Image (cartoon, rainbow, N blue to C red; front, top):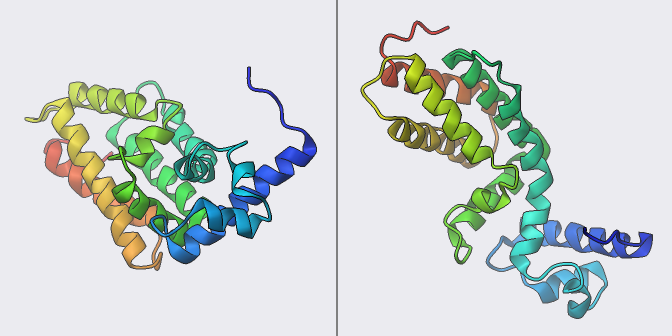
Length: 201
């Protein structure tokens, strides 16, 4: 069981997280250092190691809460869900992320995902609730329910790329349009191609 922090320790940890977020937005992941975080938070570098074992651990903390909350959308699908239900849940998940972090932090998140050592996909390291397993199972269920020439794994890969592409385009556009509406439309087009007999419900 994790030991509960004292009020003072929690305040110090929170200051470190806030400082890291500010530097992350200003300089990006690669140029952010623990020394700078310590200076901005008003603590020593050694003090940071009482709460975090690396720069990456701080990054994970910044994003973990918001992603976990959004990924909980996977649990909201009805038992006999349709493609339409899946698309709506995914659109709402993306809207949650956009509202929680804004385009600036999500831009940094995607860039960090590409540059972190030993981490092809940062979200896999954040996925403590095993959203990926649930989502893969949902896609498998859809391929069993609807006619398609693709395997569940192929569908899963395609949908992941469509979703990620939509996010990146939204980031490039500096969040200038509604991410959920755009995601919903992209997903409908993708699913119509994957399941040609799907009637759009």
